[in-house]
Image 1 (cartoon, helix red, strand yellow):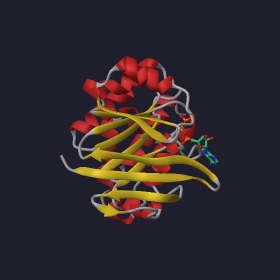
Image 2 (tube, rainbow, N blue to C red; image 1 turned 90 degrees about the horizontal axis):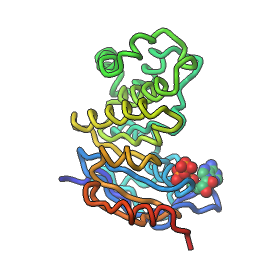
Image 3 (cartoon, rainbow, N blue to C red; image 1 turned 30 degrees about the vertical axis):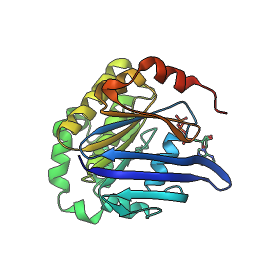
Length: 238
Ligand code: ATP
């Protein structure tokens, strides 16, 4: 399988605060890669660095074999990388339909917006039912679906999904995981940042554990030793 995204010795952070310390990993095309790790380990910072939202100090981001280190966010989006952020970040004062259409803002997907909107409504019937309501009135699960639908309107090849299960009831988490699994079956490459280890492992192909800004474990999901994962997850950083 081809590698769609490769992160090589990435060092990045916020001003004088460094968060990622020579972090390396690779994402295979058509697979679901899960990035697990405790709070503050640097998972969101990694996604932001890939999207050009955080400056990379050293190391490289290779996407489709090209060096895209510190590429502007709009270029990454235009090349098919969509971020579905933690906390959903929907536009609360806009309707569900308008939120989705915001995802079709990149030039290359404007012409396909009506077709893609239909595809999103087919995947998330509840968004269709609520298309004229304000996004601020949605439940947490519906808002997560809206955030995912908006990302899909960008016609991505790769989606970076940051903690979609946060604050959702278990049954809704299952629904969200089911949708991610279905998107993978349809050929999308997915990077899933999660703290819900058990549910994420059920749909993941590969797992990385990120702690203290480094990869401390890299395993295929079906070979991961849960005891070792647990110990590394809760180990103290030195
Ligand atoms: P969480 O699960 O809590 O989101 P995470 O693994 O995604 O954790 P990050 O959000 O990447 O971790 O945060 C890593 C570190 O960077 C933390 O110590 C955090 O306080 C710090 N940090 C995050 N955003 C900023 C910012 N805008 N300015 C300064 N420091 C930040």
